[in-house]
Length: 483
Image (cartoon, rainbow, N blue to C red; front, side, top):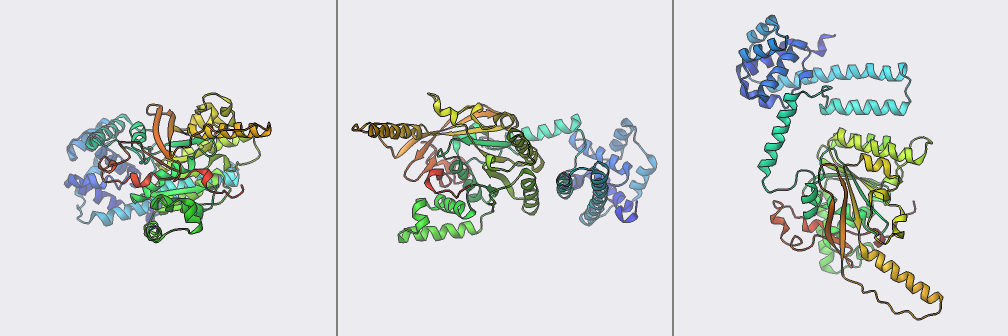
């Protein structure tokens, strides 16, 4: 291999510096990986250093030699070369050089891979592009991992996780904040690598519900990617401005506001100007296009913590296969992408209208359209449900029937300013299922936590203002563009 793709002297100097000053290995091990070294013997020594760190044993000549002998990989000549190399003080520059060489070697390997899948395997161009983009993302993010994790690595990572959980104390959040107190307790937040499905019948407010999470995150300075397949980005921004200001959406749309509301709006605009929110509002996108866009965006903006797709059934399929197979490909693709990018992906989903013929209209897993693959791939499935939607609908149907028969109609339906709402956890791979009670404030079309969490919740979440995030708008409060 060309010598501009490796530097053995630098590799020896780095390893020598670790042996003579083991305290710096903790920091170096978070940057350097075994495969960043070119010489296999150097890779083995770095790997053994990592094992010793995990076992909390000294990283010195004797312990390194002992482990290498146990693995039958001890090379005395290589070890002498390392011990005789001059330790360095400016390890950062040496690490950067080794990382640069490693990146070039990986890129060279990728060119060989492109030739193999293109010429030898004759894969379709779309698949080749996806393979290349995935590999390129892994290379630039240093996500290359060995085929298997061994037991010492797994036990070390597990103990680190347990220690982190203990350090959190009473903070229930492990994953991304959902924006609601009880839902956070039930789910511990949306986990990294999770595919989360939020499903509901039209007008229940599934978009409104997830905008609650979006707003909660951007208020905290976190990044969000939003694929808005149903409405333009400007209408999405209107909803978020309503959340920020508590100004009814209709008033915002027509500019019907008093001086205080205009002032509040200007303040919200200033805050949103610095929000880390990235919206793609192309009405049609397939899983390959979404993968490509999200990888590039995550690469450019590592602060992005969650991606939202509104909604799954609008996504285009690939090819001419049956729609069930297309949806299966979409849901599996989203799950694999969540794992690859190590972040939750939330996909909104429609429910079959068949549930409306049941006496109890609370959704079940089987009500999800093309539910088989979605149910299997999802880590969490949430249903948004408001009983008053059906009570109002039934009242209107009775009124229509009475008028068609020429009878007088007296309404018994009492419209409430605040309605009970439920988030039903239909599936949770790593936690309990059940119901979370919310309150829907009809005039403002917003969901909030019920008392006692609706007020003073900031003290629970370490100064995160979740109350301000709990204002959302349901789908029927705004006219949608044609699909």
